[in-house]
Picture 1 (cartoon, rainbow, N blue to C red):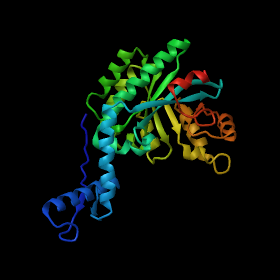
Picture 2: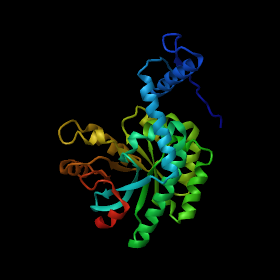
Picture 3: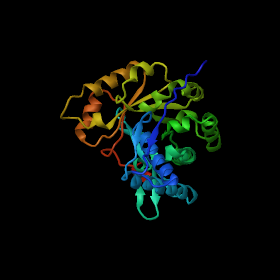
Picture 4: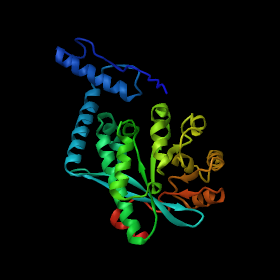
Length: 307
């Protein structure tokens, strides 16, 4: 099977003497502009502006902070239950990463994941998340005699690694977690962009029982064309569609539920925060829900209070 690789260029432009007075400053300023070109979507060019320096400095500080966080074990996992609407019971949990900063307190992933991906630090962080989440659910199942599942978010940067499959397999072996209880969650848009490269890895893990879910399903424009070839078991309805319940048009939610069930997939609605939303989803045969109406994400020690 031949792989096709698409190469693009991101360029940063600096003009002497408007933006710099030395070769060193010109190199730095053009590098800052190139970073911004990558950030806005890549395959473009951007002219340097002085205000870019502040954002670039913040980005460097974030990168250094992440490196310290890895060294000092500053990451923790919170867990949000996923509820089966047919039985009104918790059947699985989603592991959600948090950074306990020594000065700024708990930092949510939206604040730092992009930098972690750009620097490649997400690979090391992701391995820790996978191992910790698997250990958590094994211990929980052993304590309660259950078979709760665990859902772990995976960056496409992790998926692109040559050892990704062996990393997952080794983690399952070392923790003793049954592959069928692990679900790897990947954002739809990112998965579609790299599907040709990563499809073989997805199938290899699916063959041993690992499940895959597509996060934010419905926001991308290529959902249906790729759904047939992806070995997914779950579709997750994005919160932006759930937010529209009960006031606005719900046709997108009904369509996703229909598409999922036609392909024998589990459909999960994210971001359920109101009783009306839960009732609507149950009425239209959505399989599972998660969100603040059921429970906010909580640290491991609070899980026992809800079981």
